[in-house]
Image (cartoon, rainbow, N blue to C red):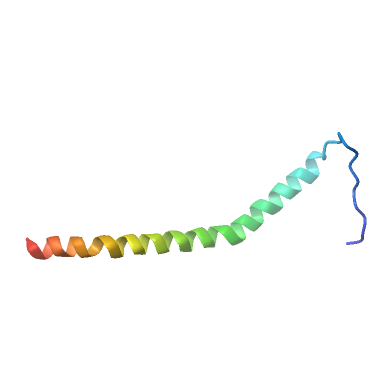
Length: 64
């Protein structure tokens, strides 16, 4: 990639192809990085909730 920069005059609309390419790039990188991150975060939160809730459930089960 050279130093060829596309200069947009004020008021120029970035053509749709570029915008779609950028959006596709962002969505691909989001799938690559954010989905595993959110999955692990979700699992972490779920395990914390289970850890908080399960002692109460165990107590109720042992009491009855």
